[in-house]
Each structure stands twice: as C-alpha cells, then as structure tokens.
Amino acid sequence: MAAGRQVSLVAIRFVDGCELGKPTVHIADRECDSVGHYRQGQQEQRCFVVRGKTHRRVKHGGQEKSVREVVEELYQQQGFRYSREVEFKGRVAKQYVAETSVVIARPAKPHRTRHGPTPRRVPGEAIALRLVISCIEDQDGKLLSEWLLWTNVPGGEQPEGVPAAQIAQWYYWRWTIESFFKLLKSAGHQVEHWQQETAEAIAKRLLVATMACVVVWQLARSAEPEASALRQLLVRLSGRQMKWGRAFTEPALLAGLGILLVMLDVVEQYDIEEIKRLAGIFLLGPYPLNL
Image: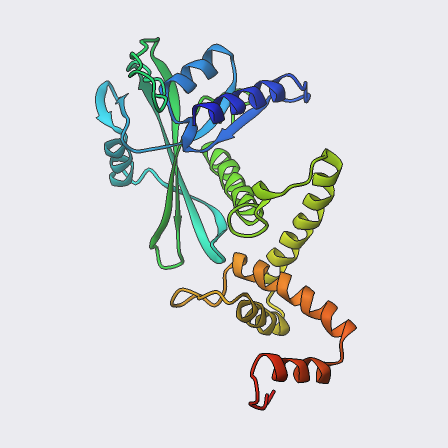
C-alpha cells in the first residue's frame, strides 16, 4: 500500500507538470483519505476531490463532531437539493447533493508499513475543506449510495468556483471510469496478468479490450428487442449465476461475449453436423446426442 501511494504521488506530480492550460483537479478514492494527503495537497497548491470515510472527527460550526453527525444534521435540516438523474448499476436513479464547510485540525497519522515501527503522529496547521455529500436514490426514494467528498476546490459563490453539484458529478464520472477498470482487471480481461513485454503490444491489446468493454456497455443499455435475447444468451454462455432479481451483469456479458466470438469462429471452420458427431462420440460415449 505504501508503495502504491508513492506511485500515485509520482503520477499526480507528472500530471501537474503537463501544463494542460487549465487548473487540474485530482479525483481520488478513499485510499487518499488522510490528513497528511490533504495538508500536502494544500502545501503544494493542488486541487483535489477525495472520497472520504465517516469515522473522522472535524470542527463544524465551532464544535467538534464526527463526520456522521455532520451528515445527519444536513439530513435533518433538509440541506439536500435535487441535482440530476443518473444511472446507478444499470438503473435510473436520482442524485441529491448537500455541502458544508469543516476544519480538520488533528495530527496526521502516517501509514504503517508491515514490519516497521508504529509511526509518530505529525502535527500540522488546521485546514478548511468543503464537505460535499452526494446521495443516490432510486425512484421510490430508497438510498442506494452515499459519497462523502472532501475538496479544496473553491465554492460556486467564488470567482471561477465550482458548485457542489458539479463536484458530485465529477466523482460520478470517476465512478463510471472505475466500472471500466473493473472490467479490465478482476471482472473481465485480467489486465494485471497480461504478459506483453512492449508498450506497443500492450497498447494494441488494450485497444481491443476497450472495444469489447464499449460493446458490452452498449448492449447492457440497449432497449432494442433483440438486445434482451442477446444478453440472455451471453449470460448463459458465461456460465455465471445471477443474483435474484438481476437478469445480467456487465462482467457476465463480457465473459459470454468472449465465448460467443470463439463459437462464431468455430462454426466458420467446422460443419455443425460434424461438431455434433464428434461431441457425441467423445463426450457422451455410446449415448446419442440429441441437439
């Protein structure tokens, strides 16, 4: 984990030096939710949006509170406003957003390595951050997801500021990118186990894999009559079990698509009757194969 954080910091500083022409905002998940990260971002004048946990204690309204208490107060004060309609796990949902200002003053706690000594807490200056809460609800008002976002991006009331709804949308876009990474990694193409040795070879394979992900996304969202039948076919080919009430998942569609492409290549090379005959002889023994 510590090595991963160092790699992330190198990547962040590389992007900062690219001179993209507009201010860069780094959007990160909960692995960057630490006081040390926030203070370092402030010191290096770096804008960030980080998804946080609820265990942290902050100063809010002149009092020390847990983040959960701050969020509950916003619920009670009806501080949430409707933002937009979004898609969440294949379903149409609604996004509501609230924000407030908090101060973090406690010492930073550096990450402990596996075999190293317990690190000492590092005191630092208090930092003021915006806390943006994004809630995703279904059409019946049931809470599907809640994101707590820490950011030092100026608020919408300031010159060149960004409204809370826009911050929430940025993270929503990042969540969509994470879904793509999931298909590339553990739920699909297993990119971390590729054995290509050159950047060109990796780029070519990555391009093909990305095209497959795009096809799956289109199929998953298609309302065409044939799309439902094809989704059912791919799930069956994948051999994966679906949870109760779910007709398909994108990883299952991707797995089924890979098998379908192989099948199409096979039927181009072999006569279907020959396939049945060979399968009947060597897979089912003397028993007839009725397909």
